[in-house]
Length: 504
Image 1 (tube, rainbow, N blue to C red):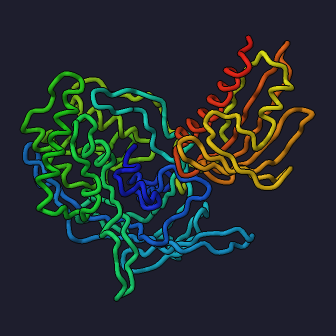
Image 2 (image 1 turned 90 degrees about the horizontal axis):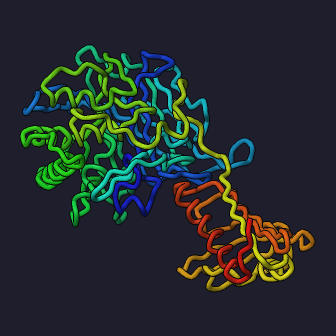
């Protein structure tokens, strides 16, 4: 998943986890460049930018200084730096909480903005524009990479969102590309500096990203059995300046990983010389783009690939929002573009990119529904007598239930057999219709979560339907759907074992 959850540390605080970096020409205003820095995988309704870290985009002039076996890109020490820092929530004009942030632009100018403002904010001269907020996750995961296989799959990020920072600016006035049109970009999250004198236990850096899939696909290749996880070590490195003492470790991992991917189709397409050259290119991890050449949905990695092939590059490289970068990268790794294009199981992301600012599609906010129904041999009365009690102990996955209150508003606290706690509130009860509805308070990573359980006559027996609606919040929709589906299926299968299963 690009750089989603790219190391053990990121699991602890998803708000600092950088998932994607994009660089492309504005489709509505070609003289302007657009950069999108995404964070917080599977962000939901409650997701916030961290006020304890800085979100930074750094751009440096770059140059090709070697071709073929001697391929090398050199970056300048000159840097265009954009740093966003976010504040705590405060009441908005309509009373609802809102988060603000400030972006420090190259040269020190500051631009304040409100999170989720679709129009974003502009500098007075119109040179810079920024948006920050919840958007549809543009990455589409269409491959499951296993130890011995590459398996196509549907888009596992369907319905998922990220927090996105979109920066747009006048290319000529900001980057001044007359002296060179090739640039390199990285994004990073770092702790907000602590006041002097306080004990500081923060790491130097939380996360950073250049090219997508450097960590999860290359450095953590599951085909390398029993290999140590280097991702946290990599994420602590300084962009544009990997520490010399760690370079041999990363070189060896990149080499072993490429050799492994090369043989996934049973054929060696990379020579040892080509592998060594590729390792050196990708050890310097940054997203390359040329502002004087076309950046398209297929230009991703073209600059690197042409340089390694000993030829001048022809496109602007970069990375658009609709790029099938996983397919492009896997094809390059597995057959060095000499074989068929490796196309994953998903044709497109959940929502295609927009042609206008802020370019990433609006967030996925539609409620997802999971419905499970069983037909039982028993009449409705004994079944309802068992499951119609909101605090009843009929579900096989429940170890214990505590209830508080009575009637509508009653709260039940469920302890599951695996030690989890789920707290729910009774919202409706209709004994005559043998149904009740409830909402989630806590325990499942979802927002707007409601459930409905009802029992209806069906032939000489009855039918039990369990319907749950939710919006995934903090975990991928696929994960939440698996949790909900398991709850419904195991519960209703238990009823079949108790009362007998009837024909549909």
